[in-house]
Image (cartoon, rainbow, N blue to C red; front, side, top):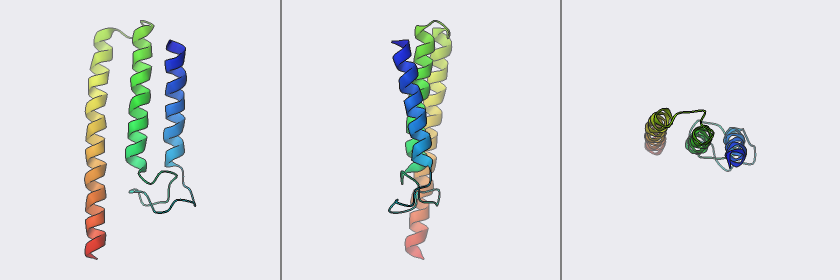
Length: 103
């Protein structure tokens, strides 16, 4: 099972990197200002990386490389950072759209 978590985590990291790469086929620019493979790049990358890190931490807990208390603390801290990042980029994106409409 720990090998599955490792493989799934690596796939999620690769997907996060692929989502943020520039793509000429994109229909519109992402909130970062360039045409990316995924037009919702900052948030989609955060979501994928969050899941990958959770899998890596759970793998460490399963193999006893990370104590349960430390794993719980890391998961709690990463969850707070994850939601803070989502809120930050959502507010920034909404403000940019509002400014674009008023221009």
